[in-house]
Length: 69
Image 1 (cartoon, rainbow, N blue to C red):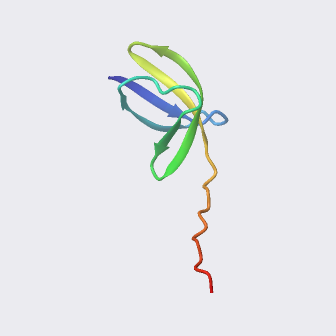
Image 2: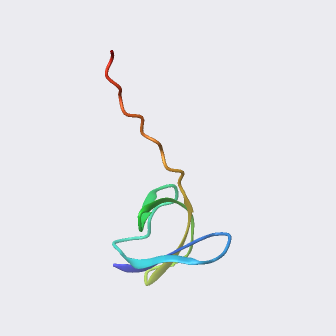
């Protein structure tokens, strides 16, 4: 397991840091808190640590199926 830091690409704010089995692939979705993010790119991924830049994914609004009248 390696330590992974998830950061905002515009502000460099660290959104989360945790241990993962491996570095997440570019384009995959990760959950940070109650929000979902997409991996934009990875920086300084070495066997001992990884910095990952992520972008928040817009929430999809689910429409409930309405019964026919």
